[in-house]
Structures are given as structure tokens and as C-alpha cells.
Length: 145
Image 1: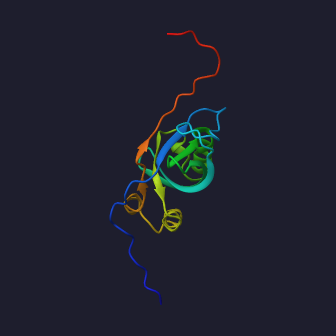
Image 2: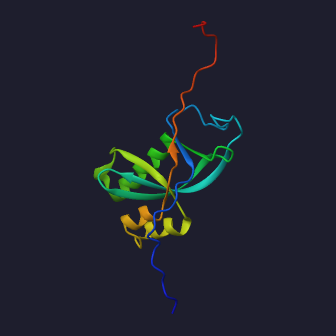
Image 3: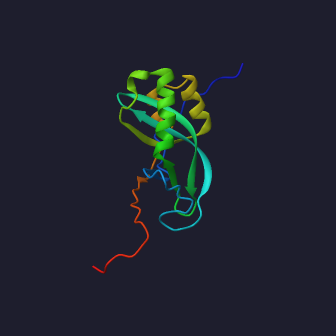
């Protein structure tokens, strides 16, 4: 019989920068910072939904390897959150949420199956280094300031 190792209890080091894309018409196929083409990568995101509910979500995201930036479209994420909440906890639909960081796939699976509690999930996750915001300026002519 294989002995199950306890979950890692040490807080993991921050990795990746994060941008929650609020623009419905902008996919950011090019990085908004360095203007290099973004790739599509799957990440296990750890999301906190008020009041005190954690969700691990395996999602395809835009990623810039040069800037180490993960870009998630807000509309797509909220659509997935509503679908999850409708099936599991309908009373929290529309509540505030916060994308905390990423997780390893095995830890993400343990959260989904209920083998890992919320405190262990936070300890096993990689928080984001920083959350970035970008403002899109439409093209066109502007008067000199």
C-alpha cells in the first residue's frame, strides 16, 4: 500500500504577472507591454469567491513568455464562474471574486475532488507577482497636448 504524503505546507514563491482583460472586443493576441505575439497555455487558476469559497479552474489563457504575463478574458471567466455556481452554490452568483494565483495540476485536482481544504490549497498555490492593468487607446488622430 502506497503511503500518501501530506500536502506541502510552506507558502510557495510568487510567479507570473496577471491581467484580467475587461475588454470584450480585445483578445490581446499581442502582449500589451512588449508587443510580442502571445501563446495559449492552460493554467490552474485559484479563485476566491466571496464569502469564503475557493475554486480551482483549469483554463486556457493567453500568455506572454517574455513578460511572464497571464491574460484572462473577464467575460469568459465570469461565464465559467456562473456555470459553476449555478450547479453548486447558486446563492453566490454575482458575488465579488479574486483570482489569487496558479496551482500545480495535481494540487488543482485535489482541490476539485475535495481531498485538499482551503488553507492547504492557498499554501500550495503560487500567488501572482503583481496584477497589471492596461488601458486601450483607440487608434486615430488626437490633437497635440
